[in-house]
Image: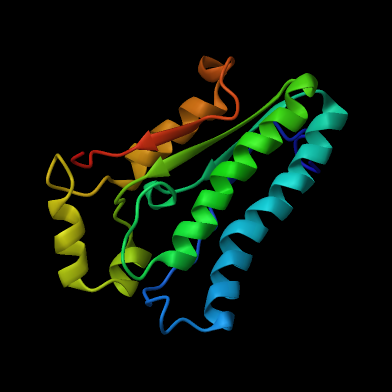
Length: 170
């Protein structure tokens, strides 16, 4: 705002995961993932929307995950948080459509980036890659392209949508 005087696009890309069975997950582990992934997205969305309402428009793109729709062992906290991001996206879109603001999300399946490689076992990455129709993970730029589309005027009639960026087998 101090540099450009407006906030036209905001991307929420926060996420925290981990792998742990519901049987062994502590309240603190559950809460930490939901606080960063869902509550952080909510707080940033709310702040951006207040500015965008005052200026009469804008676009928000949230980063969800196909795990918000599908199950994966050891991912209950992350799946719940990303499903919450999807619901937040739809509800926020309904709240601000009259102000000319669009709120959408992307839901990638497996997207390879250095942090994921650092916190995930090679065995799990191989298993997840095997589920992908193209036999590989998405590259970050492939997910970013979907985000750029949703932030652009090409998506001027889309709001409250969650766009799957996935090549998973059915």
